[in-house]
Amino acid sequence: MTRDENGMNTGQRTNAPIFVVGHPRSGTTLLRLMLNEHPRIVIPAEAHVASYLRRVEQKYGSMKDEANRRVAVERLVSKKRQLEWELDRDETYARAMQADSPGGIFDAIMQLWCERTGKARWGEKTPGTYRFLPEVNAWFPECQVIHIIRDGRDVAVSCLTPPFSDNYDKGNVYEVALRWRDAIQRCRRAAKTLGPQRYLQIRYEDLADDPEGMLKGICEFLREDFAESMLDYHKNARSNVARGDNSFHQRTTKTVNKGRVERWRTDADDEFVCGFEGIAGKQLTELGYSLSGKRPTPAQRMRIVYEKHRPRRLIRNYKPPTGSAAHKPDQTQSA
Image 1 (tube, rainbow, N blue to C red):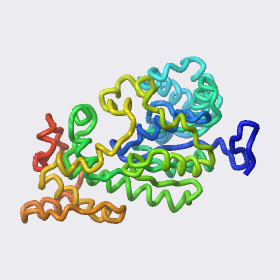
Image 2 (spheres, rainbow, N blue to C red):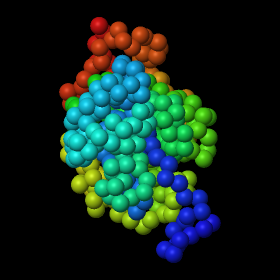
Image 3 (tube, rainbow, N blue to C red):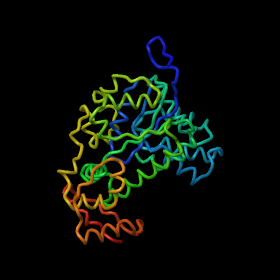
Image 4 (cartoon, one colour):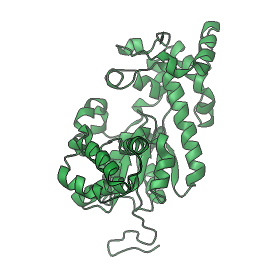
């Protein structure tokens, strides 16, 4: 292993893009903040760039066509989150217009972050990018993906409790279980394509239990040296979280701890737990999470079967108004 005069690893170093993915409320923001404190890595607040570029190319056509590219870039630099990044709009537009592909546009924008921070390597964290990993892989054949997983029952409790549920989630425990299961399955498929050098799966619980040890392993995967500054992420968390998202990430201003692990044992009732395990119990077990041993009632078993197979587009999702209501899984309304 070759090191420079400061003792930093240079023999295996790469500037390949980093993508942090996972179901919402799984610890993606925590991991982003940690990685963002690395002296070589910058990961700004999420802006859903991958999903946007995929969507506009499908709608308008190839980005090689200047007219298509102009429409895509104009809309991209006008997005609310792009404005929140406070990148110079004219410069962003000019850089992006020089590219002729979604990946080129993406990279042009992210390189502005490298220049702003003086860091060599950019990363992107939008939880739902797990849905677009085939496109990401095509755009960036050398990228590395970190998939962070959290016990789905804790994810469901967090998703269905305000303030997050008031602003983002429009489901119930069955909907969250199906989405969580889908995230696991999609990432597993991507892992087969990317291989172990480009795909890493970690657990939120392990990161909370041993942040230093886990970050050292992540840096090894990224071919970067571990930096102690990553453990001090909480000192800059308030300024590094998007203004509109601060209410969802209040705990990032403190050091990580195990206090939110297995939250479902105290914050979810039996019906809630059985509902989630009925949908995604197999995936929980495969990932090393123990099942509760609770048994659904005959009526709930029928509900679970129904939720597994019903056409999703024919049902209106229920949006729980309060934290307590979020724990009652029988409130979905049929269309």
